[in-house]
Length: 90
Image 1 (tube, one colour):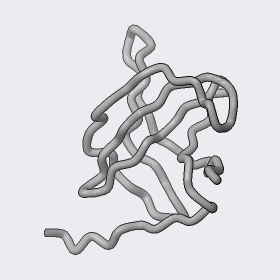
Image 2 (cartoon, helix red, strand yellow; image 1 turned 90 degrees about the horizontal axis):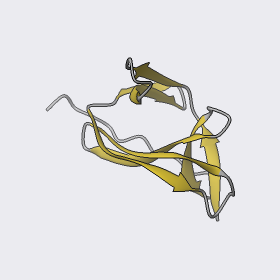
Image 3 (tube, helix red, strand yellow; image 1 turned 180 degrees about the vertical axis):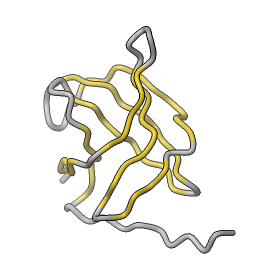
């Protein structure tokens, strides 16, 4: 079962109001978002509601990051399990 894991996100808004996430914190680990690969309006079919879904890349890690109608950021995870990859700098 998918659950919402709310996370702090640092984001930038441009003059047109387009919001781009730049970093997020998961379990105390700060990740810099290197690139937003996809951005689209999305219905949250599993949890209900509407929002924006971003496919983001931080190093070799990719995930879907959501911003809901209440302007809260979250990841959808299976069974509330989260693993942060170890980066060795290379």
